[in-house]
Image (cartoon, rainbow, N blue to C red):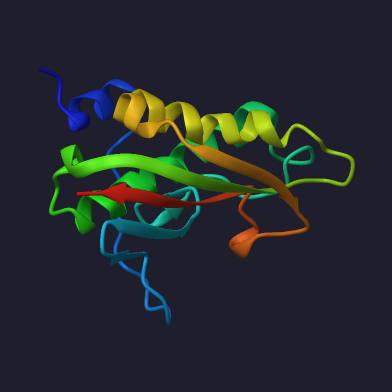
Length: 154
């Protein structure tokens, strides 16, 4: 049987290795059977994989890849919250995709698909979720995408 980690590695992405930042909030908080994951940016190790506005310096394909990295980081923090056992995921309930785009850009849903598709690929039907994808005038560190999540676990 293929593990979640095996499926992740088959995507071509590298499993995240993120150190918690010294912020006045946590990357993940569990309350009962719900894990809330703070907004994740396309951070790869100590680097930001993508910076810039979608439709200006970031293409639609790059934005979609950035969203996939955000979803990978969600899985990283979720795995830490669940002591490495993603089989405890009951359902990804909802994600919100924030897209830093130029005025007039309207393909937010396609950008969000990068995150949604990765969650489905790794978690199967447990990764199916409700979603909002919205445009923003800017995001932290000028990243093109940020994604947060609400996940039911056991």
